[in-house]
Image (cartoon, rainbow, N blue to C red; front, side):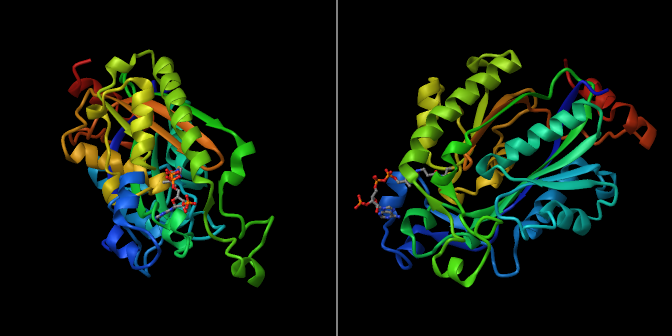
Length: 357
Ligand code: COA
């Protein structure tokens, strides 16, 4: 049984269409000044007509597999975290599985709003460490632009589209994903939701007329709880990992609002220069925000092998959670030759050979 689960591949996809705050000024009664000062967002990406959560997931997933030098047919599990799936069912993960040609992979979606990626990561880690699977492609992806009421300035300025993916593999090394904590409070569900389209309020001409298939949100309430919950989860994940905040090299928070991110750092007395922020360019991409941020942090040299990383998220449900991991990085191109080797513990030998443990 593997001791640990490590991220060995990562990739993301952001639609090429950029919508700036100036573009929004032409659609709703808002201003660049209001959006920037309240949220930190300057622009966001919007999916084009042919793009969906599954097509963006496929592009991110393919990039993660390439980084890990893993063939799609060797992937054993695909989990897509999303609140904006292509369909109610089949799961977006199944569409991704088919398109990637991941013929041996199990596939399902996880929906925990903006905490979906962390939730999927926690499941993948558990299944890998228990020996149920050797690897999992964990994707966070959203096309929230299709759930937004573009006449509602209180929500449409906040969100964006995109996808991020990570390949998680079993490892016998002593490092990896060291803790995952998840929480929920369903009593607050109505503060951030899409009311219609499910079994309670099925799609009808009435539901469409009343705009019930759009995201609704009580922003102020969400804000208050997000800061406290994320800070609490971060402390819990750090304690569970047996480290201290001083050991953390980089915090990658869910990118919902710059003021929420700053509030979490302040509450934890965590230095802001060690917090990764890219919300100014993407807005809130919900489940996609953490995996996209992981990719950009790595690409800009802010994630190096051996770094301790704190992931923390909050979202509708309410849901929230955090994870501490030690960044392993790409596996230096050496892969056990046979499926038998892979079954024995996958990257263990490789990890131990290349890491000064
Ligand atoms: N442009 C201009 N004015 C806007 C606006 C916009 N896009 N959206 C709302 N307003 C107006 C409101 O109508 C309200 O006007 P009123 O006072 O005349 O009624 C006023 O701005 C509210 O301002 P304020 O109270 O300063 O807003 P805020 O500081 O609470 O910020 C949010 C609003 C939405 C940015 C903030 O509450 C927030 O970020 N909440 C969390 C949202 C979130 O991250 N959700 C996802 C969690 S994963």
